[in-house]
Length: 218
Ligand code: SAH
Ligand code: DHB
Ligand code: MG
Image (cartoon, rainbow, N blue to C red; front, side, top):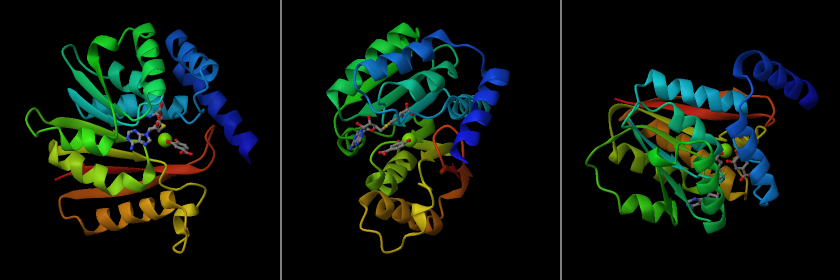
């Protein structure tokens, strides 16, 4: 099925997304510089852009920058004066992202913070709250990232968490894989937390079979 999923994503991109030099250059630069191809797909990137615009987001937080592919989509959704803070552990990833954001003309809107996201988040205070949060880093910390997002956000904020299905791996209750354990801990936290409403949507396409959590803080 994977080939057909890819072909349909190509069709969607051809009909609805159009050519995009900055995003194509970003993916090419990521590959040249040895970054893993684990960015969101083009269709998913456009979805993030649309969701951020629908939410009227003026302040966006991203956890997990990689080469800034998703960052560019999200930064483009911001109105004039809007800001995006993105957290990245690996200095090389952050350096490549800086180049890509510059090339895409959005670097003035984006603040890349280098370090372990848990530490970067702990250092942030709740003033000037975020409207929209995209979580896409180490999966074992996802529950922590959601609770930090709530602390740093406002009522009505949107939270998206990437990669919560992993080809059905989420069902493996006895998994020793920290990413699966972390994903299941995220679902348990979302189920128990009265501060938000949440769902998860499975996806297929250029990135295989996966899915994302969509949550709204009450
Ligand atoms: N959002 C990107 C993809 C992110 S891939 C896109 O769609 O384009 C996940 C990223 O999270 C990697 O760059 C990895 O280095 C980073 N990461 C992993 N653990 C982290 C941590 N503890 N703190 C911050 N970033 C982390
Ligand atoms: C991985 C991480 C991602 O954020 C993603 O979208 C796909 C894969 C990973 O760590 O394998
Ligand atoms: Mg991801």
